[in-house]
Amino acid sequence: MSIEDRLSSPRHIQANPPWTPAAARIDYSPAEQMSPALDRLSLKFAIWARDAPSASLDVGCGDGIATMSVLARGGHVVAVDPDEVAMGLLIGRIPSEHFRRLKVRLSTLADLEFKAPHFSAVHVARVLHRLDPAALTQGLRKFFRWLYPDGKLFVSTFTPAGSAWAALQPEFRRRKMARYPWPGYFDKPLPYCAQSTVTAFPLHLLDESVLIRELTAAGFVAEDVETYSPAWPGAQQCCSVVARCAS
Image (cartoon, rainbow, N blue to C red):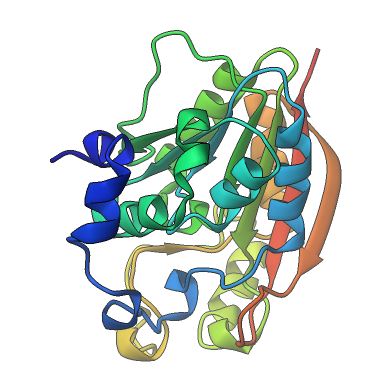
């Protein structure tokens, strides 16, 4: 049975959940933890999507905390994630009365396309750290195309700040001084940085200046920029931006 079929079959979801329990699939690497609570960016997205004239898109929705918040407020949302386990957990947690306002897609951002897209909002929280520079540029251009002319982008990404990335910070600072265009992109562990002590590679950490630069190049205007710590324990920082399409 496909993910879409499960969405239309709530009895099957409740009686025979075929997905791995969350406790059995915890990833303790700093960049891979799913948020246990709605952070400030996702709350802004949920409030905006509540009264939006068309559906909103949640890219990399994970097990769906932002998607569920939109649905609880009466909004329509398309939830996308490549992880069938996470998507199954999302569907299993949603009350059946919300199903008609939810669509789901199993897809990576690179493979994601829509025939006639027009979304009121795109939410992409802590996803960009898995994209190389070319894929990141392509992804932001997709968002602009899907949102133009009146939609808003809600995006957050890990910055190099915080002790979780201490082993990478000297090299990041060196690259910034040398004016590397992508100073936070690490395609493999540094010689002195064991993969097991940091996270999986490749890893793309984006500071505010690079994120704003790329959003501007894609056609966006930043309206709200904020740096904050994620909602789970750990010395990390995220940069979040709410952006609109430039006219």
